[in-house]
Amino acid sequence: MHIKTIVTQTYQDQNPGTSGLRKKVKVFQQRHYLENFVQSIFDVLPNFQGKSLVIGGDGRYFNKEAIQTIIKIAAANGFGELIIGQNGILSTPAASHIIRKYGAFGGLILSASHNPAGENEDFGIKYNVSNGGPAPEKDTQAFFARSKIIDSYKLAELPDINLNEIGTQEIDGLKITIIDSVKDYAQLMESIFDFDLLRQSIQNGFITLSFDAMSAVTGPYAKRILIDMLGAPESAVQNATPLEDFAGHHPDPNLIHAHELADLMFSDNAPTFGAASDGDGDRNMIMGKGIFVTPSDSLAILAANATLIPAYYKGLKGVARSMPTSQAVDRVAAHYKIPCYETPTGWKFFGNLLDADKITLCGEESFGTGSQHVREKDGLWAVLFWLNLIARRRQSVAEIVYEHWKKFGRDIYSRHDYEAVDSDIANNIMTNLREQIETLAGTVFGDYVVKYADEFCYHDSVDGSTSANQGFRIGFTNGSRIVFRLSGTGTVGATLRIYLERFEPDATKHNQDPQIALAPLIVLAEHFCNVKQLTGWTAPTVIT
Ligand code: G16
Image (cartoon, rainbow, N blue to C red):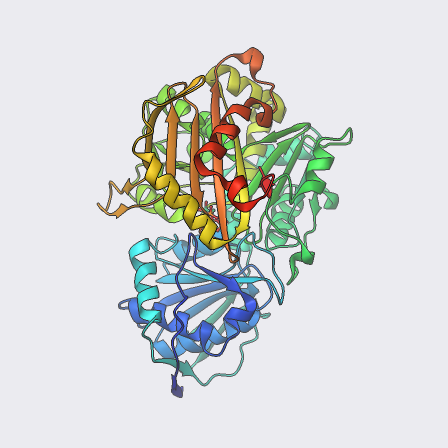
């Protein structure tokens, strides 16, 4: 194999965010841009000669071209085998599973997740380590540091590889294996859940469902599992073909972007269960007839019912949630006397806890839920978990949710996003919050008394590392909370996220509209951060 060394110039903006490097496609298409970042990763990683690397993505625009480039760089750097999803397709949880199952050294996942796709939209790349999870911060910081000084990259002179044909070919000692993108993942799901029960419940009509794959990566997975294996009708999976531009949609499974599903679920024709996933298949939105389940509640309900699922019959070791996620799961953990960990936003922070067997389930308010089975959040896994619960409990989604609230109380929750705010304004907001935060404890705002206020700093109990500046928390004596942080996944300006939550133990008050129930906290949040005043905007861009 002939290997060329290409001289390059550096870019100073290749700093991975919450989940990898995400930029506009046009940025990635700049000369040497993708190559520099991939080579920077390989320059930092030790001892992968002769080992295998998993490669796949969510099928968005630039996915296939990027894979051909990555193949040539990985070959030149000495990997022994490249395991690639057919047509370059691998959902993020499937990629995580394949890394683990085949004992790969790591993987490169090409996705900008829920961000829109297309020539003028977003692309992304992230590196996952051998446990199948996103590279930890110390690695991503090292990739960034390397990218700022890199002066060359290596490229093997290879023809473009046919990504369509399943099988292995060998070129000068390098094995290139194209795998069925779905098969291994589908087998894993079958080993976790009670597929016989699900088949019965779907085929006898007890469960009717609608799954929106949002023209992104989950379509083939949902079709194989829900339709081919579980016998749901073709009409159960909407927007099932992955398109390079996700049909011009924003594949973010929430009430705004998955509004067609939401409209259906609140109509008279609603099936018993509705769900949607995102661009790369790791997020999920769960709905029942006439009800939307917040991701925070979903995590708590899965934790409370885990022993109804074959893979979790033995119970849970512990649970974890990201800091802005509501405290609903904390109540379940306290009830069952298992540990509950609070981590910063970003799935990578769950990896150590899962590897050390300290937790079995984990989740985030940003529509992510997962477990020991892989090291990424997993959209279809959450869907199958819910279907299995409905089938076992013989109850509707609404009945399961209301019963849960009755037992544990309801954490009424909402997130307000101010997207693409001018970066200077956003930084000002954070600086002002930092200045106020330490003096807030004990302050009284009407019925709300501040119990604690801090800037969240996480100490990883497994590897001893510390992650500072992870957002501002203001907790009140009545259990309410306001959290402020800047998103780490946007590509334009800055996105301010305001997370609001209020605990309501009284079951007669559980049927409330969150925006009304949280109104006093919404006013307080503006008092602390002045985002409306500083931007001149009258409302958040997205409310979930
Ligand atoms: C990524 C991370 C998640 C995180 C989410 C939101 O999700 O994997 O752990 O919660 O971003 O991050 P932010 O609030 O910083 O935008 P995904 O689905 O985009 O990979």
